[in-house]
Image 1 (cartoon, rainbow, N blue to C red):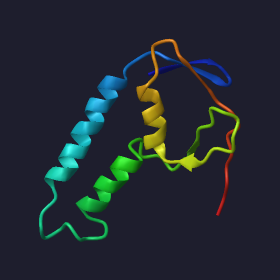
Image 2: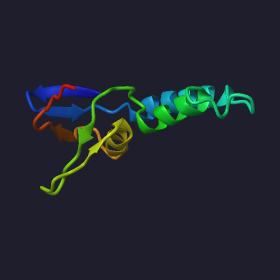
Image 3: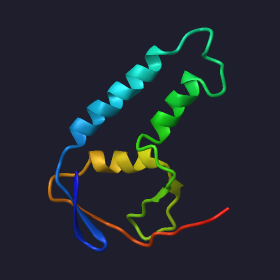
Image 4: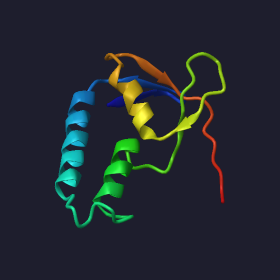
Length: 103
């Protein structure tokens, strides 16, 4: 979906609709495994569905999006994909600091 333009810039090439269809198919497949017997299991299909909805990229990273110079908040990948959904071919994403942390 992206081409790295330089060290801190990605250019959007399109492809979100293909990704969205794949994400939808994944959610549909997880939903199909829900049954009355497993709906309350803490690590069953309900939990997997929740994880897939809030973190569709399945990454451990959090993304801080800040368009207006504010503090921003760290969010899971669903918020990033919501931003990508609104991009047009040729739009650019600028990458700021990448922070790591250890437990």
